[in-house]
Length: 375
Image 1 (cartoon, rainbow, N blue to C red):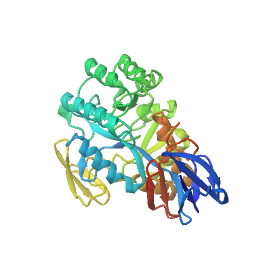
Image 2: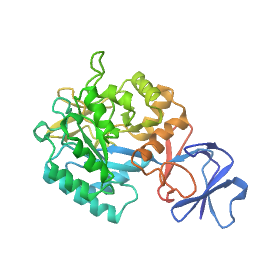
Image 3: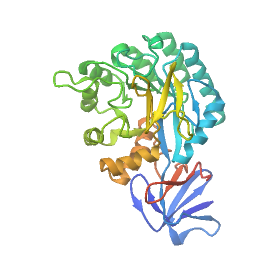
Image 4: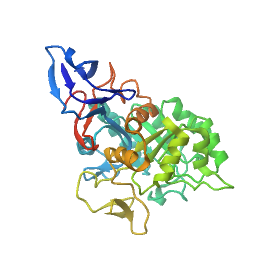
C-alpha cells in the first residue's frame, strides 16, 4: 500500500486538503485524513503540490518523434506512451489520420494485439477519416479521402470499442445506418472535417453521432444564414474536443464554446511527432510540415496538428480563458473519460478508480505522474 500525502487533491469533484490518497493493487483504495494513514503504508510526500487525475487525450497523432500513420507498430505505441507521460497524460487514443484500407486494417490489428498485452495507457484507436469532406479535409491526403465502405465499417465494428474507441466522419458523407452500425458496437462516432449544413449535422447527432472532433477546425464557419456544423454542435451539445493552444482556436471562441457546451467540452491536443523532441519538421500525408513558433504548418499555411500538450492546454484554459482550475482539470480528465464511457475507472480520484494521477506545482508544471500507482 502507498499513501500520497501533503498535497492539494483535486478529485474531479472536490478540492481536498489535509487528506491522503491510499493506493493498493493499482487502484485507489481510500481517501483518509492525513493523520489516519495505516502504519503499513509506504508514504510519499508530495511537498504541498497539486494531485489530480491523470490526463486523457483522445487525439494524439504522434509524439516522441513518431507518427502513427508512418509506423503502425506496437513499438510506436510504446514510444508514444513514454513520450507523453511527462506531460501528465496517462491515457490516450493514438489517432490514425486518413489512410488506405490496408493501413487502416493494420492499425486495427496492431491495436487489437497491443490492447491484449498492454491495456493500461493506450485505450484504443481514434480513426480520423477517411470518410471526410474533401473541402474541409485540412492536411489529410485528398487522394485517400473517400466515401464510406460498408464492408470496412463492418470489419471495424466487429473489432469493437476496446480496439476502436472513436471514429471521425463527415456527417454529410455517411448514411445513418453506418452511424448505427458503429454505435451499436460501442464505438463513438464523431463529426469532423465536414462541410455539412446545420440540419444535416443535427440529424446525424440525433441519430447516434455523439461527438465533434476539434471544434471549429475542419468545419465551415458559423454564419447568419448557415450555422453549419459549429451551429449544430451548439444546438445539440455532443461531446466536443477543442485544441486550446491559441493557434487553432481564438481564446474568445473557447470561452464561448465553454459557456454553451459546459461539461460537454473537453481538451485534446492533436499532437504530432515533435512533441517531446526538438524536431523542426516532419512528413504528414505526403507533405512536409514545419514547426515554428508553436505552430505546425505546411508550406501553404495549412495547419498540420499541433505541438500542444495536455498540461499546457490546462494552463491555457486557466490563464487565457479564465476557466477555474478545478474545471480545467476536469476538461483534461473526467470529461474525456465520460466521452468514451470510461469514467467509472478513469478521470477521478475516488475509491475503486485506477491510480492514474498527475502531480503539478502551483504554476501548473508537471512534477511527476503515477500510472496504476507506479511513479
